[in-house]
Image (cartoon, rainbow, N blue to C red; front, side, top):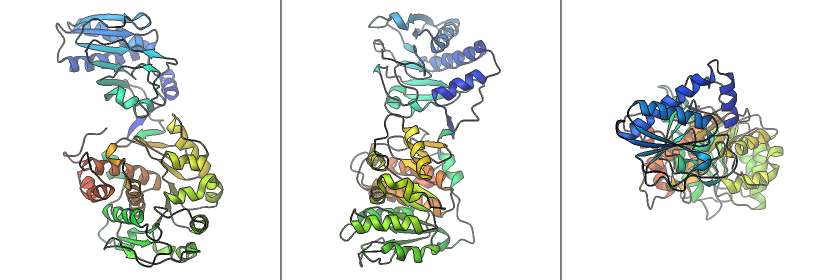
Length: 457
């Protein structure tokens, strides 16, 4: 995991550092100078413009300018408060105008075609949310210190930050309660099968769909198999025949009071996945609420089951003693909370987790997974290939499979989101459908941690 600290948390880490401020500035400036030299491909004769602000970010930039000058770079420092509209010609511009604590609006000057290296966060990008105020530069790279900042991962931050390098400047970030998930984490968190395992040790029951609408639960069931489930039962309330994956076992459920049938046979399963394509009928809503109040095994709640809970989710889930994983997109989050997540997606996911006592997987370009303790994991492995119908159902199946395989639910949810993104990354950039993502899951798993795996992002 790569630690993530909010600006406020980072400021406290700075204050607690045993080293003098000047030592930390020099270490940070050294990291900036090294990154600048790498981008320049050398030093002697190159031209660099440093846009330096009045605060600590500007201090880092000014000291970096001195270090670069000693390497033969021709450096010009420009005051961020009195920038010309277009910067002087250069081979590289260093954005050291304003850091994570900046509030207000900032228009970065035209770099005149030169690439931009940002210090800590691109100026004008909110270090907490990734929201922009004004016109931030589009950096080719950002050097951030000690830990990632949420604003580099959320909102518009990634498109302005470019490649992000975390520079170790000797600060203790061991107290971070948020982190970015890596390939190696997924391998470490999800147990492999043992030599004495059998199918029932990794059994998943998918309950979803409605007569004539069985695509969503079928995708979830397929993904569960592709992610390590040993046995998958698929049940569509009110449907007696289902065109399900060949490997799954279809068991009929009554259209009404179907929860009672699930409760009666729950002990054979490691996890239930409820909601994909379930519909929003009175019977569906009653079934979801009854089920969650009565089953004692972990449950992954998605799609129409989230809609069925609505703002009553805290009350419905309050009596549960086994883990619950909620997997909302923004619209489903608003249904659960009564308002959209807003810019601070870390706070949004954490707040819902605390209110419901559940693990919350808030989907998005950066997926945020939070648990009731306040811990959070962020996932950046996916891209626009996941913006197609049914991929959320695939994710539900992966989460359920990982829980069934023995992963702790908080980590299972984050690992599933990461693998889900990696699988999409193996699919065509245009024309990918959810079934393609499900089919790519085994190869994506095998690639995790291997030399051929995609770069961490």
